[in-house]
Length: 186
Image (cartoon, rainbow, N blue to C red; front, side):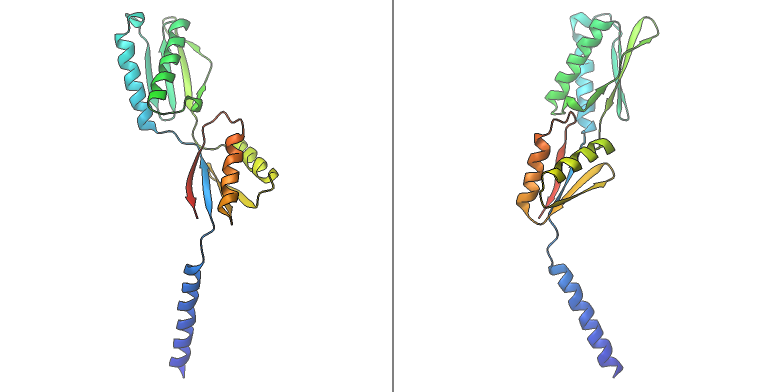
């Protein structure tokens, strides 16, 4: 008797697992903000080469370096600092890195009458931006659920059209940080 009961319980358990695997996953996608740091390094290398060869930078001690998520610019004066900003935006654009991800801090005095400026590379969706995205998507009355997962925002819904409408709503917002839409699952 025990063997028949065990067999029937095992069959129910196996069939239950099969029922779970047959259910379709809920369509979803993630809203993220990421920068390819390898491309940033390549842009900085090109910028450093150009600073070394340009006539207007001849004899200057202008440098740029990256540490983790920050760039540090050292320039001789305000004019050279502005030229370095233009070079940085140009080289990042060539490498398809959105310059909107740069957060410029105010320049400060450095040794030898030079200027130092730090630029933060904004990555991840911070809490305020995540709340704004959630509020806008929920106000649109779409049948989707929105949740914050670390520095990402996940949008789930039953219909693919609702998810695409949510992407259109987020793209229509005036957000100064570049966003990507990843892991679109059906």
